[in-house]
Length: 433
Picture 1: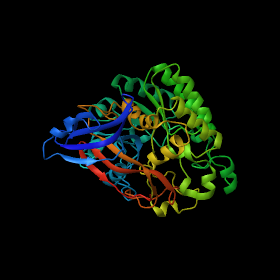
Picture 2: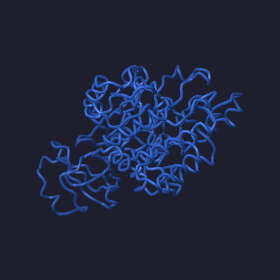
Picture 3: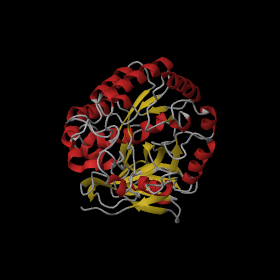
Picture 4: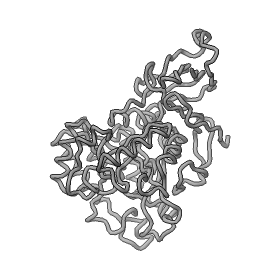
């Protein structure tokens, strides 16, 4: 047994918070009991119970990230399932859903099972999407029924948009029958000359054409229309424009099946970061303007955007040092996501801590039908312990990669413990204050 004593519990599933003592069955990986702080029943525990006095630190559900790239199989020099899981645990995540743009891509049961079996050895919960189309070519649907039966959490060709309307429509029909979400990367390549850089101030600075907002808006408009017609669970990935936020807002008023993700970099940074950091701030879709950043924050505030997902995208140092138009897009995000949410959303008054934790645990778990994002007797002992009184400096990563524009910045909130299945999978006491 493990007792987390004197913690301030925040549970977005029930909407309750307060000082609690939480007893964990380390054998079953479940929460055995939850008491009010200093309840006399705590004194009746078996002598072998390990007790951790949290001294008022926050106890919350382990975070759930439904958009990560662990590059395994095929690109393990960037990241692999083991190092990705360590980065997740360090960031307070106990459940992650992997994207399917690996090599080979996740369009067969064999590749899916390789990922899931390797994930079982990491100490956290590793789930994976399968591809919508074979080889991510957008021409032939995968065997979605078989892949779902073998453990696919959802379907996506993330990294490549689905351009064929009929392919998308049929995929949504089949996914709806399987009760699995489809997540879409919304960038029409017909509009894009140079990906990863907004066609605005940043593109002008570098003397390139860049990627205009219309690339996202046009795809979001089309795909929401089709999803509303088919009644399928659709998630708009890493939303970046104010117009797309409004399109999602209108669609959500018509259907509970419409969802959207915001990445921490999109609610934190603008295209100015690309001028400062170059390829370290290059990503798809690109960082855009201040009005877009504020619209994303408002979308998170009013519930238009259900989820915060990192789009954790590791690359090697050598790759990111290439000329801007040749360097790959994407940044790592698992280890900085919660702190960015605290700094940019909670401390600035846009969200409460409860609301932030909901968008980072309970809401994404619900879309993907994961038993996560809640603290309840009999529920999974997947928890994080957060010290809000400490700050830390972004420097060393558990990830193989270090491609982040936030290196050197001070961040609020230090993860003291990450507990998954009743076991401590990360313990960190570092902090600058």
